[in-house]
Length: 177
Image (cartoon, rainbow, N blue to C red; front, side):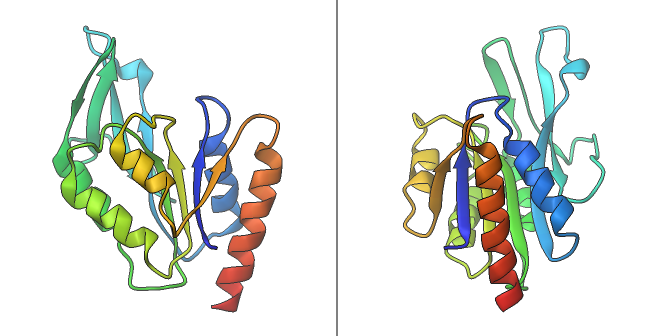
């Protein structure tokens, strides 16, 4: 199985795991990470979240702004998911590792993006998908229960072992291709 869906609480190390994998694999990678900027919060206490291409510097503009969160409210820009998100997880190279860090509740109404995520999980590509711990959202539950993925629950006690395991499987499978 070369499709990993990793779920963990906040601050356990999902993005750290992705960064370790990225540092090991400098080529044949596509996908995205989302980055929140608490220091750019507006007067209402909402902070922006941007979608960034893996192995690239973040671009803080409206074409990359997936939404605003904070104080129990959120705003989502579905077009960024449906256009940029779909583009970043699309590849014609079966050797490409597709990284999605992270998928959560902001994508709920981005139908094209959600379809593409499911398509990627059925592809031949290796996938590393970090999943927000929100199983009250049907899309996230469907990802977790997808027959094509190996679902892993990560915590502070097992995170180093999970990194080693995922790294070994991805290395073996990409070398075999």
